[in-house]
Image (cartoon, rainbow, N blue to C red; front, side, top):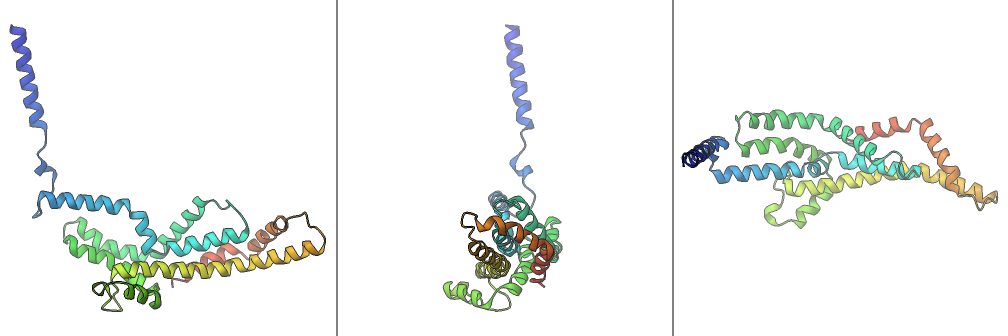
Length: 244
């Protein structure tokens, strides 16, 4: 009987201790004027932004132009997997960080840092963070593409001030402009390699070598040509200078 009583007493004491160790929900939420529901919504919004961060990097930076141009280079050389996708994507990312460094620094100093220090409300911080990216996109977007999305948008989405575009209209217009410039540079990159392919094909056919694929001879010639003209230096320099 005593053992049963002691066991019951131990169970009660352990349950009370466990209950005392369970933290209150209010203690887990930072102090502020917002309610529990608003804080939960903020956390969900933050997780959503983090999950789509790679897409945001592609949409509002110079990554698209770099990736398209480098893809055209590999196709023009006739190489299927060299350089590998990992190398091209990594090179595009580091070139993007190089070009976008002033924009990232402004967004950090003007918006992210004050928000982390609780010296600026979320609404004001969002405007400070997006403003450098808006200015960058406005400097690169074509007026024709911007006008296209303004015409397609509803009246309340239209850009009232041409110098400060609405972000929902500016981002797709900027992406289309970047794709166009990427394809323009890709054409200029692929054109010399196309000429080499045509010359090699003509020579092999005139020599009667019908069974020999022209690409077998053209591939080392194109690689040698790209090395002799210091192609990587010219290409990367031209891509970075295109944002000057």
